[in-house]
Amino acid sequence: MNSSKYMSIIVLSFTGTGTELNRRLCEKLKKNFQLERDADACTGYAPAKYAGGEILPLPDDKASLIGDRWGKAAYIFIGAAGIAVRYIAPWVKDKFTDSPVLVIDEKGNYVIPLLSGHVGGAAALADEISGMLGAAAVHTTATDVQGKFAVDVFAKKNSLVITDREAAKKISAAVLNGEKIALYIGNSSVSVNGMPPEEIVLCKTLEDAAQYTCQIMITGNLEQDVQGKRNEVQETKRGECTLVLLPRNIAVGIGCRKGIEEAVLEKSFLEILAANGVDIRRVKSIASIDLKKNEPALLYLCEKYSILFETYTAEELNSVSDVTASSEFVKEVTGVDNVCERAARLSCTAGSLIQGKCIREGMTVALVKCPLEIEFRYTDGK
Image (cartoon, rainbow, N blue to C red):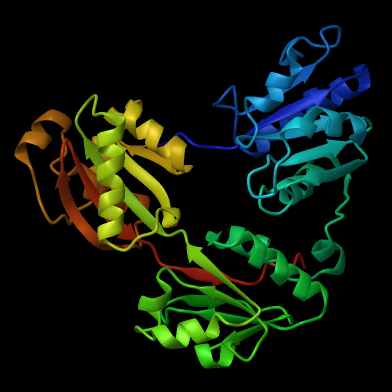
């Protein structure tokens, strides 16, 4: 299998001592995160007089090094925090779209997640790096310091999409204020692992959740999943704060003709999602045959919507035994009689097919819904 989407890491140092740590860190990152096969997955930069070997010289246009990859790469600065702040200042927007940024002192004693700690993963990366270097990770986020439930960490670890940023901020503020937060899961088939932290109260019904000022609801389609209780949902939403988290658990398989237009593929893709009541934010992956790994329209679609793109060989696809339709023509061309269903099923082997092979202009699409498990054991940092 080939996966084309990852968060690359850029390490910057500014002194001789810092650059030695840069080299050592890049080696450890590549080894620990298995990035050796992709030369661009972890790149070190330093002033020209310290660069050499695996460490590249800092470009004259340093702003482009940050701006061109902002939101797509993690940045690690070895040196003073002030240097990092000046470098990233023009690009900082909000924690939901910013790159994760870390600072490490040049002796490698402390690792500080400076920006996008939870959503971007800087806090988790700081913990990983501190373990590699034998350093101390310094966390300053209030929920981390107080050992409290953090809804953004919870969402990230459970592949849930935050639909309302302001509501998420209010949830965090309520937690820090000592309030109880209601959690309602709008699907009885969801499995829950571990014990929720003391701040969270699991509610079996919307009526129970409505008793709390702040509520979190996990559902793919709120009104459908509560069996059409529209008025009840509206009444519940009159609380001070209701945050809906969407499960990112839909795997999409796509087969398409070579050179299909970007607009044609995107339009059909969105139409099929809409016909199945699937919010595009729920799509976790798009999969196809490896013959399509460089197909411009597929790469464009995945880049535009920040969706993981996976490809499989014909042999891997043929290992899927159950499909709803077959095409001898497609089999002659690709070696596989049904690309879209087989690809979607391989992307989520434990999932259930919710849309079989659907034919559109120059393309086919299938949808698989993956099982949803809610994990509490690692949401509070304990």
